[in-house]
Length: 93
Image (cartoon, rainbow, N blue to C red; front, side, top):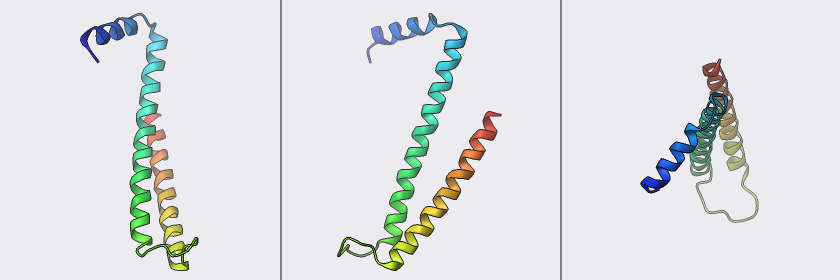
């Protein structure tokens, strides 16, 4: 982004009323949280896959130990995600 574009964007932001500025700040905060959660989901997906699927995939189904491992890993992920959401909600309050 060049200086003229940045100046134009800042000028546009200055035209917003206080409510619109607050709404924009909230939107940006929500998007930042969403990006953080998506990044964490990606990392956990990679971690679970590397941990649970250690050999070559030979057919269209995982073996029972891989399935169990992935199910447990996903459950831990969901538990962690739920606790994270509770924490973020508490921070907003």
